[in-house]
Length: 194
Image 1 (cartoon, rainbow, N blue to C red):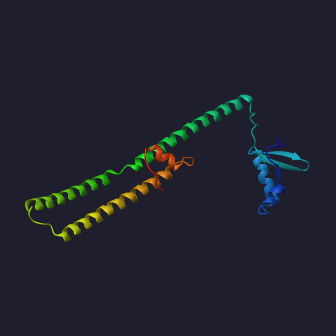
Image 2 (cartoon, helix red, strand yellow):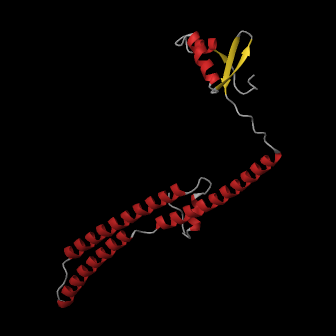
Image 3 (tube, rainbow, N blue to C red):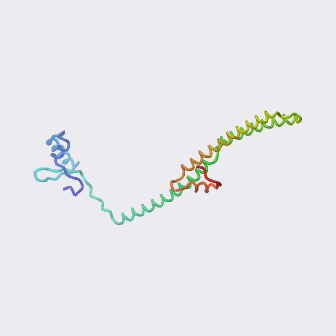
């Protein structure tokens, strides 16, 4: 008997399931040898023997086991909740860190400002040494246009960097956090960037 665990098969059924790749007599001999070596179980059913896999007695689940499993599930759910809260905090910290400029960008900006200052100082000393010398209008205009173009490039670049950082922050937000909430949590004023 199979005690309800596995369906028993006869040698004829096994041969048929294998599409007669294995003959019935070979299947019967192989199954009989496995049964005698206690690798499978067999039962006589009428004129034929049916075989099934060895099975261990089932372990009955007790009420204590169920209580223990319920406690474990409850603790796991508590840990999951705390981990989700921690994940949200870490994402907010990451968004705040991403909003700060990189040290390499700051160094590049400081170097550029140093060069601009040196140029301005040289120009100022030249003009100061020649106070009676009027500055031609085309030089003033050319210098102003060059300065405007340079600072316009800086402003465009910084706006692009700001938008990119803001998009990264929005990507890092969990699904239930609104972008307005992040904007306010960072202490920023004005309408949020999109």
